[in-house]
Length: 265
Image 1: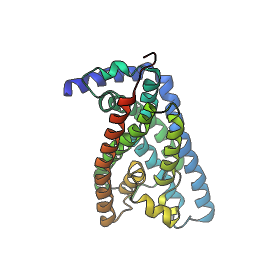
Image 2: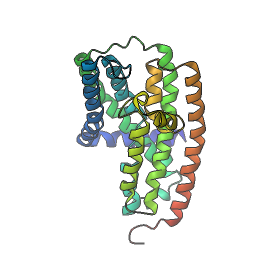
Image 3: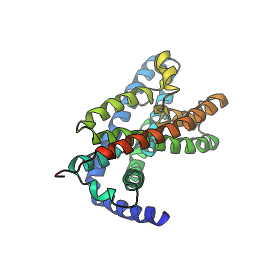
């Protein structure tokens, strides 16, 4: 199996280098919103002194950490896989002795992620010198705690996104469904604004949903903002969502493949 993943990595890594312009467009798309949020909330906090206790530096460190975490935990499963169902090109992958989603699509995501992080580094350095954040609260212990949290966040987000993408077996309007999923993600993940600034009801709901593990939870771990109790609670909820997301994907995939009919079949 390791040889299979190694070969898939070689193929997908080479493929990513062939579409560098496409990678640049995706990278710019990913960076625009967080940078806008950073500039807006920093300006508001600087003019008022703070926003509900969050200073301008708190917003700068939050969104600059978000840029890194988002690149690690995000995925492009919808854009990789949905069209294969709709144009019938999935057929050739189904006859291979590997799972199309859990092998090729997964490795494609990781290859894209590795290359996009390389493109993010110089941009992040420029932002660092522009905003001059104070990362004094960041410790090696916090980073060590955040690494497995980000891995869990990526796996959970990948499986849920794969479940949403697999709805393409039933409908050609999977992109609309994905937009609804993204709207929920935007609300409950802490991408738009740190969850501490959201209404209490949103914060309470977000604690038990999987979205925070893609952004807010690992960001807070890195910045040292969580108590030991909150850290333990977060990991417990994430470990609960891991099998839930896997079984959800497995069920949607199994039922969807039964309905699959290639174009022209």
